[in-house]
Structures are given as structure tokens and as C-alpha cells.
Image 1: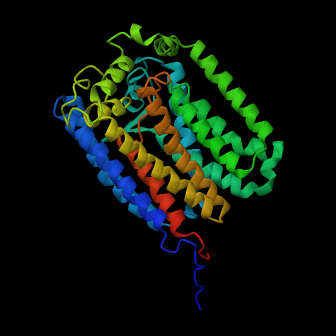
Image 2: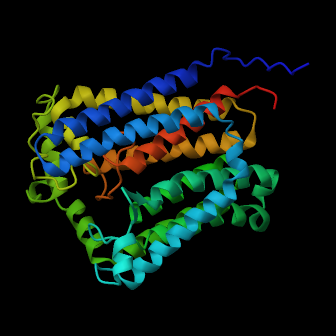
Image 3: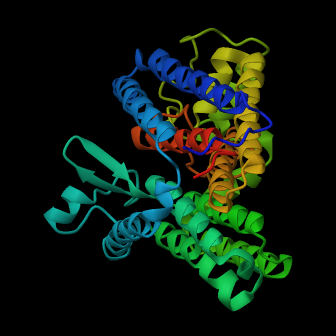
Length: 383
């Protein structure tokens, strides 16, 4: 006889259905915003087409991930993480040695210097930002380690160090690209999983202090980061119109209660170089207004609520840790992006999950959501 599934308190599993619906809404909004802006600029039009392609491909990835047993990722956690780590090492070495567009032709071909950074590996028909993939593989790796260590995570040498070592390695390799914002996101995601796994407060506080000190040092030693920080700390009335943060705030203010209308925003017209990615929330706020931002925020709140609810109601340690990591990854990225758009923190370069243009980012976000659905659907079932 086959073992019957243990009845779950939420037998209808409405959390996974609501999570899927909210994700569909977010992806649709992202495609619409990119498409509406793409009619004005060749760059925007290209990003809009790529966003549609990413949504189609990512949708397929989501469906496959939702049907697969999420426990398979635990088996392949180490190979996936080590492959990602190897790619990050290659990029970090190139970024340190050739921190400009100079370098051998083969380096410029496969590790291009774009927008002042080495962050991508370029293959035929696709430019891949490996740090985006690292968000997923690192979360799987840390979740697998947390499940293996069990109660030993409360010990410093046998639990704390092995659990946070992958997080530290990933963040340290991403930072020199340079990509400090992604390094911070990876660190916070890893610490979130470690916290749920049961790490003691003392080592966790020490980790936070070391992380803050490292960020301060990186800002102090980089003229570009110092300039961004100086822009952030200046009084609002001294805001220089040419600066992206200033233009972002103008876009947010212009939107008013209900926005100027879809496709009618003006701040995206050569005022913000990265309006389709780093400042997409400002473009959205100008065209959809305060009401649209409230609805968008509510969608992200529901997404995170469902993700953490799935983590709370699963009995599998690996599933719980992985659900927390994947949900925290989306939540922290959305918060940091919104804070930049509202001038509550210095510009970071982080995209808004599901909304900002970026095929790999969108696919990874949809993959993560598919895994969350898989965890939610398999709660309470016998193996």
C-alpha cells in the first residue's frame, strides 16, 4: 500500500496559489512598465523585449521548479555552489587585474567591462550576471548546511563557522566586481537563514559588526562610493538636477496620487540612465502614482507573507531554511531598491525583483518562487 499524505492544516494549500497569483501580477507589471517605456528609447525597447523573453522562459522555469521535489536541490547543493563560486572567482580575478576595459581580447569577450564593472560572463545570445545566480545557489547551500548541522549550529567552531563560510566567500568575491550592494544582499540573506537555523545571538551580532565595518571600509576606499554617499547626505534643496537620485525623487513627486498615466512619464526620457533597472520604482511611481505604489507594495507584502508562512508551517529543516532564504532574498532586495528610489539610502544598483529589466534576475526570482511553491505543496507529506 502507498503511504497516505498526512493532512495539513491548510489542506487546500491556499498559500501556494496566492503566491503564484501575486507573482504573476508582479511579472505582468514589470513587463508593462518596461514595454510602456520602451517606445521612447532604443535601449528601453531592447530591455522591454528581453523582459518579455525572460518572463516566458522564467515562467517555464517556475512551472518545472514547482513540480519538482525541492529536496533534489539539497543533493546538488554543493556542485551548484562550487560551480557558481568558480565563476565568481574568474570575474573577481579579472576585476582586480583589469579594472577597466583594458585586457586581453578573450577577457573582453567573455568578461566584458560594462558600466564601470566586471559583473557579467557573456556567452552567445546571453549575458549572465553570476551574482544573480549566486543568490539562489548560496541560499540552497546554506540551507543544506543548516539541515546537516542541526543543533550543532549553536556551536561556534562546528556550526557557526561552517554555516557562514559560504556566505562570506560569496560576498567577498562579489564585492570587488565592484558590486557592494549585491554583496550586502547576499550577506543579509545568508544571515537570515543562519538566524532561523538557531545560531546564537553573540556570534550573529559579531558578524553584523564585522559586516558593517567592512562596508564602511569599502565606501571609504572607493571614490565612486564616497561620491554616492555624499550625494545621499546632502540637503534635499541642494539636489543637483542631473543626478539620478534627484531625478528619481522628481519622478516620485510628479506622480501624485494616481500618476500621470501609463507611458506618459518624462523622467525616463534620458534623465535617468538606469531608469529601467536601478530606478524602475521611480518610473512606476510617476506613471501609476501613490495608489499604484501602495498596490505594488501590498503585492510584495503578500509575497513575503506567503513565503514566510510556508517556512513556518513546514516540518522539514531544509525546506524551512530554504524557504526563509529565498523569501528573504526577495524581501531585502525590494526594500533596498525602494529605499534608494525614495532617497532613504545611497544608490546601490539593486534591481526591483520581478519588475526591473533583467532576464537572469527575473528567471532566478521565478525559479525561487517555484521552489517556494514546491515546498508549500509538499508540507505534511510522507517521503
